[in-house]
Length: 90
Image (cartoon, rainbow, N blue to C red):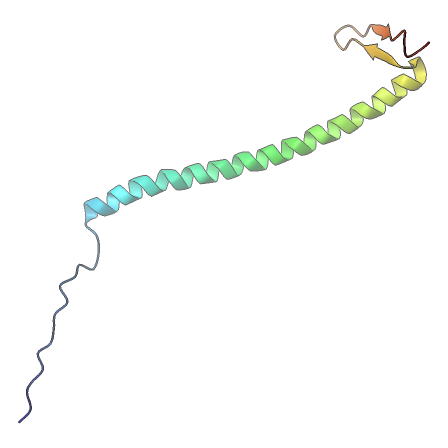
């Protein structure tokens, strides 16, 4: 008669310990939170860059209007005082 094969039992663990799992989760969770916060910051940065570009375009329109009315001048944005550039207007 043939030999009976014995079933080999695999003694390798099937999961990490509860303590090891908690340690991993304690590290991964703040990493995930930080990455999500960085994403939010990047989105806000992108929106602010668009806002700045829009405001710069509006400023250029005003500067062109002032140049048409007063010529090439520097305007003090605190007081509104016009400083005529002598060399540019000569």
